[in-house]
Image (tube, rainbow, N blue to C red; front, side):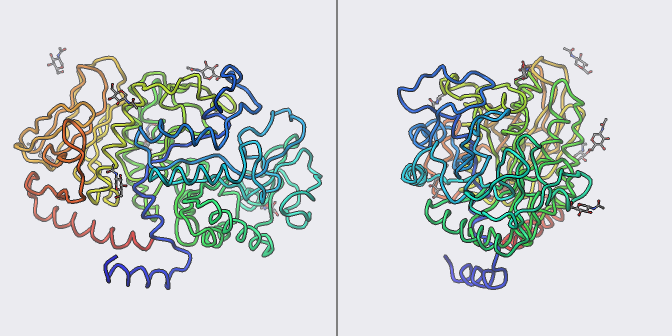
Length: 532
Ligand SMILES: *[C@@H]1O[C@H](CO)[C@@H](O)[C@H](O)[C@H]1NC(C)=O
Ligand SMILES: *[C@@H]1O[C@H](CO)[C@@H](O)[C@H](O)[C@H]1NC(C)=O
Ligand SMILES: *[C@@H]1O[C@H](CO)[C@@H](O)[C@H](O)[C@H]1NC(C)=O
Ligand SMILES: *[C@@H]1O[C@H](CO)[C@@H](O)[C@H](O)[C@H]1NC(C)=O
Ligand SMILES: *[C@@H]1O[C@H](CO)[C@@H](O)[C@H](O)[C@H]1NC(C)=O
Ligand SMILES: *[C@@H]1O[C@H](CO)[C@@H](O)[C@H](O)[C@H]1NC(C)=O
Ligand SMILES: *[C@@H]1O[C@H](CO)[C@@H](O)[C@H](O)[C@H]1NC(C)=O
């Protein structure tokens, strides 16, 4: 670290004791694969026919079986894995909603879930990920525990006294205090709500997370039900954890969501507002409203402390698989390209790359093994996107450079982030006589490569690129050909040294004032982002 960087870090650490800027910085360029431990891989020799769609009991996946099947994730270019919760769960008879194969029904949080392995197994998984240069993100639940009645015996749980919990009430979804203090679940499987205002609970959870992170060398936390906890709990909890925290804030309202990112809240949240916009724009059939995405990019920039840290997804364990909502594969490819090429951290839910198409829980938690971990078209697209994004992250300022919208048309949207132009369309697979003219900052003489196909793309006069769909609605990811040297893509060797030129000024149209403003604003953003 240079002297100035060290000094800046020291000043930051002093002025903002709960902000772990370096840790967020390290996560910004990562790419996450999300796994439900029970469903990702079977131990060797287990019966592969034991987990039909809709199963609500354990199928047999473990921390070890994930560790033994990491090649598939790493080969696709992912640099982090988010695993389902590791804490002990309810162990009684099956409920009307089945067994806690998903890991979210917490009993004694201070113990590990023996269904998924031993303490050494979890350490082994963490070590193996680190040996591969990948990060471990663990899902944690502190909002609630699980019970089978509204007058539960909690004496075997981490917090044993009734007084450490809010009294039972059903949530009134129009009342924020009620959302924070009343109980999630229902009266069949109620989720008793921890009193996270109680200093004993705050201190107990703080000590617990500090030792969990240290013991298992955890690199980041995904926080369940974050908006159901008083916001001021989070800086203390995440400060004790000392690692990047990304929270689940379910809901499409961006003003509500934006409250949860910042030094007085969490480092980041899962980007439900953008997910909603992607549904509006890309699903077929659907409203095909491209303006929703352009509008959301603008709102994000204005309302979030740092959009480049948001977690972007189109599937997870709580929402329908994309293919259940939209069967046209091009709608999936275009939405995925958007998530990889825009501001934020892309997250892929296991099975998304295998065309899984279950609807709501438990149908969206399919066993992975029937797919045979195939090298599918979607898997190959993800591999290319990860390889390209990892190259940009390692060699340029791409990750901290804000996305700009170049063009919005009824048929698509074009964005510029760093030197990369992405053009996404919602027309679907059938060829159509449609074109989207995109004005880029590139000179007519510049040579661009479509990173997804390795085809060369001409730039017309005035920097215009004409996206045409006579072969169907494919996404385009265009990058200056000369800057792809050493990327390992499109016939270039893979010998990155971190020396690739960032601003391809020789290739760009010089619009001096705009250029100066862009440079100044990215410098300012780069400077400010070190505070977030
Ligand atoms: C909101 O919910 C809290 C917690 O249940 C309750 O105490 C309060 O009275 C509610 N406020 C209103 C306006 O209903
Ligand atoms: C499309 O989205 C924009 C931005 O969210 C919204 O203002 C507009 O009403 C939507 N159009 C339709 C037809 O739903
Ligand atoms: C959506 O999910 C439901 C339940 O899993 C299933 O019955 C239905 O066939 C799915 N639809 C598609 C298009 O895959
Ligand atoms: C998947 O297939 C592509 C195209 O044949 C190949 O280049 C790639 O190496 C394969 N990936 C794996 C992990 O086998
Ligand atoms: C990026 O840089 C890191 C650290 O130097 C290295 O481990 C990783 O392999 C690089 N990734 C790519 C895709 O170049
Ligand atoms: C495509 O559309 C353009 C403009 O509407 C028209 O001039 C052209 O003939 C069309 N081409 C085909 C093959 O239909
Ligand atoms: C040239 O590009 C700008 C945007 O960069 C656009 O506003 C303008 O209309 C274009 N001019 C022509 C003649 O296409």
